[in-house]
Image (cartoon, rainbow, N blue to C red; front, side):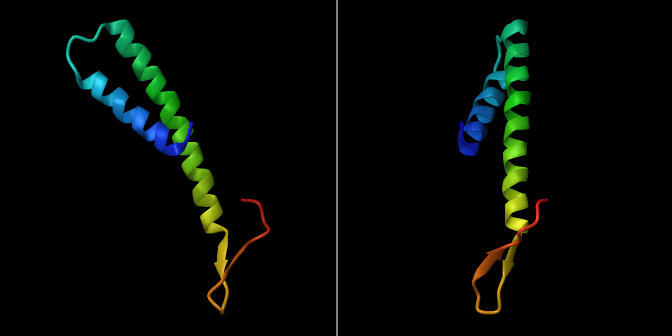
Length: 70
């Protein structure tokens, strides 16, 4: 699942949880799925952010990636 798909799924889950007439068991299931999806999206975002922070701009305007692990 891509980051964008995770965000879309979170929006779907939030919409369902905000609706009326949702049974408690279904609401809990959606909430658990939402937490797992949120954690996965946050991890993917943190990984992407770490890669961006490793980029270094050279004097000629090109970019290099630092060879160190974060």
